Amino acid sequence: MEYISRQLRSGMDGLTAMRTLLKGSAMQIIVGPVLTRKGGYAFDCWTPEEGLSCGYTYGRIEDAHYARKVEIRYSKKRDSDHTIPCSTVDEFVRLMI
Image (cartoon, rainbow, N blue to C red):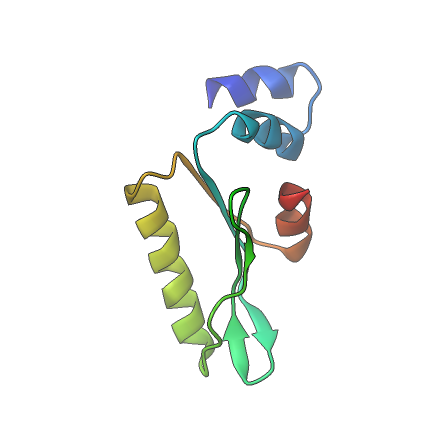
């Protein structure tokens, strides 16, 4: 986080600083927001190694939010150095680029 703080002080925006930090990481996972899909609700994940992974579609929004929280917690416990949960589609897309 200190690296990001230095980058922000130098005039770099938060997403650019985060992207710069993650480029040299061993493993990064970006978790998208819960969205409406045909048949229910889902969230997607993205890694540089595997690209975009479309999530399972849940019938209830509460189930999709619960599964997303579990994915975020699990990702932080396994060998992932950086897990970034995104609140908006715009944020998710900007971090994937």
